[in-house]
Amino acid sequence: MNDNIIKRIDEAVSIPDLFFQTVASDPEGIVAYQPLPSAGEAPSSFVSSTNITVAQRVRLLADHLVRAGLKKGDRVAILSLSRPEWMEADLAILCAGGVSVGIYQTLPADDIGYILHDSGCRFVFAENEEQLQKLNVLLENPTEIPEIEDRAAETVHIKLEQIILFEESDIACPRAKILSFGSIVEQDRDISLQSYQDLSREDLAALVYTSGTTGAPKGVMQTHGNHLANVRQAWQAEICGDASKILVFLPLAHSFARLMGYLTYLTPAIAHFPGIFDTKTSRLDPAALTKDIREADTHIVPIVPRLLEKMRSVIQEKARKSGIQAKLLQLTLWAARKNFEAKQQEKAPSMLVMMAYEGTVSIRRQIRERLFGTELRYCVSGGAKLGPDVATFFEALGIEVLQGYGLTETCVATNVNRSGRNKIGTVGPVLAPDIEVKIAADDEILFRGPNVTSGYYRRPEATKESWDQDGWFHTGDLGALDEDGYLSIVGRKKDILVSSYGKNIAPDPIQSQVRNSPYISQAVLIGDGRPYCVMIVTLDAPNVETWLRSKKLSIPNESLECMPEVQTLIEKEITRVNEDLARYESIKRFVIVPGDFTVENGLLTPTFKVKRKPVLEKYAGEIEELYQESS
Image 1: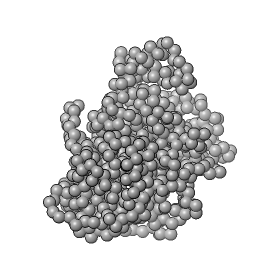
Image 2: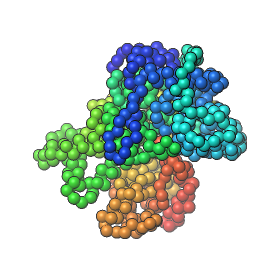
Image 3: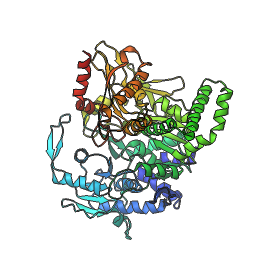
Image 4: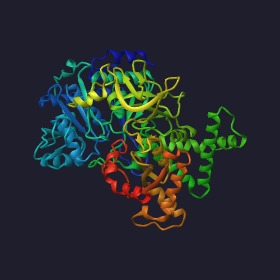
């Protein structure tokens, strides 16, 4: 642990103060890398940014905002994929005394309009033409705002003064001034900006809107002090060090990724961003992203469980194919699992397992390097619960995945496992001693500490429901602490299903087990107020098609879910899960719905969590049929 860094963070009065201290300590130090576009599998070349260069760009941007009329406390939105310009815009907003409002680039125009209206943004940093077109739609058409607490539903017209584009565009915007990000940061002029010196730890730094799984999104009020405390806590937990390279590819609009961004821009750690696949849209190319992750060779890869599940599914499906390569992969996975199980039981593996394990070391190394490059120390999993079997799969292959925990309201991380002391199935101990955690009488997890925020923007009733008079934030999650202080998450308090027989059923673990199937993408358990449980599932279409080919069955152009063979396949997968469930929580019936849940169709949050309420509303008819068929 670097005590000088801890001291610097603790003494900083604001995020910009710490940023400029870091710049002054090592002006020519590298703060970020980003790959340049390359064709196919050709190795990428990287462009780097130094502290002093980024600081000058941030000053120019902040000075521009102040000259444009931005006042202390004004909100400014950032609508973009994660990229260096995102962090520079964020720091510039804060330096100008403003409040940063990150918006997921995947959100449709109406959802963006709600956030812009609720936060009162007059300025927007937007990535490209795709985002500009959404803003044009909002500026030209009315936006419907739902009823919220004591505020009636209303129809509003979004008004913006300036849109600053990261990627230049020829598209016109009649109702707002458009400027080029590049034209601002490449200017050569005097800067008189001093706004950031008036900031304190108590000042608001960001509004981060929750993903809206249970209603209209709420803007969490995060202060400079909240963020500085969490950066220090993460550094204190030795999540990273002076020369740590951290991959920053998750959406910076989410607090988990923002913490990683601040760890690199406010300390000596270094950020690696993905390349820009398309300058006109914010679409991610999976192949290009996989290549970027591999070639970045970062030490630390923050990741969400859904991506780990997909990676495991791809590996397992390759092992199911015919041929010598598939057989060797099967042997590798078998030996890794058996060796890990013996290790967990503190037993020596059998001679056969040991020979197979030692003989497949090169294949395990290839898997690790193909996924994460040659320098990976560990992945940090956050944003949702990681299934123990997924964590075990990677751990057995020698890829350490440290599950952590935190919420937007705790800005952000509160707990994380430590390398070499990883307890699979838990989210680890608290990051630092100044984070207090306790389990309430009803098993709800409560937090208190300098990183914990104080409430929701313009939502007094919601704030009163989640923060008590003693400053404890009530997470809504159920959990338990073991003798070592490691926290385990049981489920969501509001998501607990109560059957008509009074049985409490936690859906998360069951849904996770079903999603472990390579042929199932999403799963939603239903059973609240019902005599038994049923389930909605979606298919992992590529894997199902591969399975059909292996059985020499033709693949239909559509309605894959209607094939009797596919129905039987999924029934077997669900039967496998039911074998480990109590009778009252087992899945009695299921329906395969067409397509998949996505952010675009409103059934997933931007961090890939299922929006239960919209799913239940959309498939209400199918659910009723499942229960009617039984009766």
